[in-house]
Amino acid sequence: MNHSMVSEFVFLGLTNSWEIQLLLFMFSSIFYMASMLGNSLIVLTVMMNPHLHSPMYFLLANLSITDLGVSSVISPKMIYDIFRKHKVISFGGCIAQIFFIHIIGGVEMVLLIAMAFDRYVAICKPLHYFTIMSRKMCLLLLVAAWIIGFIHSVVQLGFVVKLPICGPNIIDSFYCDFPRFIKLACTDTFRLESMVTANSGFISLGSFFILIVSYIFILITVRKHSSGSSSKALSTLSTHVMVVILFFGPCIFVYIWPHSTSHLDKFLVVFDAVLTPFLNSVIYTLRNKEMKVAMKKVCSQFIIYGRIS
Ligand SMILES: *[C@@H]1O[C@H](CO)[C@@H](O)[C@H](O)[C@H]1NC(C)=O
Image (cartoon, rainbow, N blue to C red; front, side, top):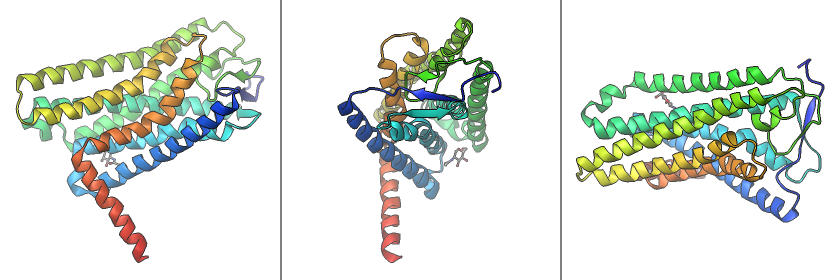
């Protein structure tokens, strides 16, 4: 911290137009609350229903926990700042934001790959499902997700945290992340920018390809052994593919084209920070009958409990 001469950063926000600010405020508040509610409900439902104690639902509940984090790293500060003239964040706050964005982003990516692997085993090796996706395996995947997320975040931050920042301390966005943070340094940052593009960009792109290829592979297997269960498998797969595209699309754009002059990346981040976690919870529950039934039970239990007490 001694190296930098700025102690805080000023955000320019997303736009100056009052109408768009109002729209953004309503949009983000509604979807932020809906996403917190939906994902908490998923976690509760999976924890409270013994017959949902299977690898797929454990991974889903863990994805929901991660989604609670995804929406909370950027959105509350963004919503709080929307109508403020002077939007500031401390140096430490900025670094913390970058740190958590990349841990949670990393965990989410690994979990999505783990969920694809789970579907692969369930569909292509159904007889060995419970031996392969054992309790140990689930725990291993979960621990791996957090370790990979942590390493991914710390490695990049290690390069950036000591950068001499001499100002201006203005960030043309509403949150802190590498592409715009690095631009504030007063040294040549070309190599750092390449490192971030390689680390964050190619990891997103790589995970995206792994996922798409594994889903295509599963699809081919399903079509070969087409049976009664294949249409159900297909509908589960299509929801997973939707989530993957929604999550990775903005990530890939932000990190692979960090130098684009358009402001499209800022709007795309709103999408990832607010909308995707909400859509995840909706997509996974609305298209899953077991989950819907279990959720209704949990909700009615709460209502009954509320009436008694
Ligand atoms: C997350 O996954 C682990 C490993 O399978 C599991 O033990 C845990 O219960 C899951 N968390 C939730 C909230 O379901």
